[in-house]
Length: 80
Image (cartoon, rainbow, N blue to C red; front, side, top):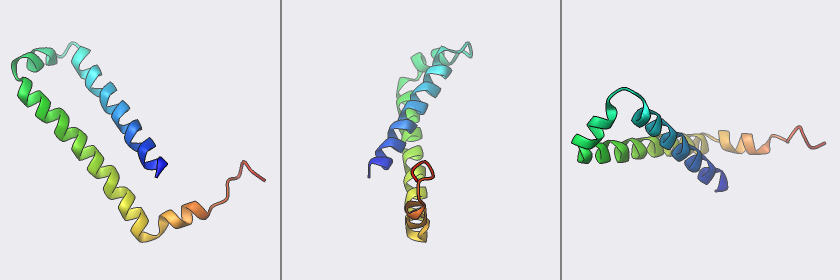
């Protein structure tokens, strides 16, 4: 369960950095942010929801196919 939270937190950090990169770049996106704030909020929230859904679907698919059990049964090579 902790790995899911790590994936979600990692995704949120990447998402935050991506949007800051877009906002502070010289691509005139800051004008779009100021003019269409509701569109910006919808775009940000829908992108986050899409990313979370994608991660969750991949996790559920791995769990249902049994790959997750095989990954958990692999021994850590760092520990002898």
